[in-house]
Picture 1: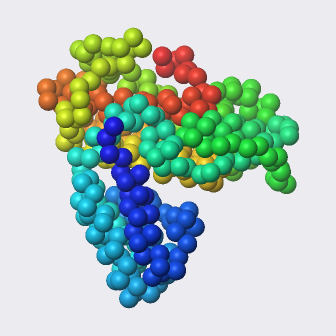
Picture 2: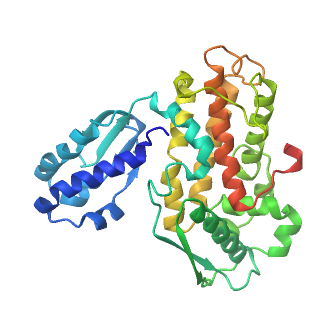
Length: 348
């Protein structure tokens, strides 16, 4: 198993907090629950950032200068960290070596949305599934499908699930029967779970069924169908019994194109959005991440002309590129399975 960056970073945060706990009088466990570890708003600042120093000493500049280096020194000892710096606003920005992201693709293909989760990086202690008593409109139906998907997600990443009763608000959703008649259950489910709660009220059958890259109800399945076709078209490797490609070891996985590196990096950020979905109780945090993955795949597809070029047949690169596409397929397919979405016949 390769080194998984999020677990190593979180363990480093824990170690440093334990070392300085007496000086800062902080509750380490409580602080670990509050800290954030996410991509910064400006990608130029780094690949990940954390607010740990701000939680220790708020806006005290002198304290930032004192405690920031305690963390950055330890982060820079991790073999995948390129640099660790404390910004003027108190956030620690981490840059990760570009070659690292490709090394994680095998683990992503194996673990799907469980990548870097479970015992290594617990999501949350317990997920409370708030189920509606009745599903008579799209708001209540979305909630039912939402908690079913999140419960499946929680179990896959090793989080306990308990049930509670969902209290409906005053706002009523679009007609359930009308939406099902216009869209069908599968497209309706994916449209609702890949949109915010307001869409269940201001529902549009046209938007839900539109064949556009911007519509996850179309783009997820279409991306998977394109990847399946490409892997079959350019397959020269032996296959396992389930049809999965047998690829070479980690030492052969090198991605060189900018869009390839961006896509592999984005895939490695999936645990951040899995945690967010469970913490906030909304599958849309995960589906929004998957939509970003899908759109980036289509950028690569168009820019490199994957179907008509020798992109997947080029010696020295083909195995890494096939693995990248397989990782995209795994993340999307695993998530669709959790939501109870079947592959549409028109895409198979």
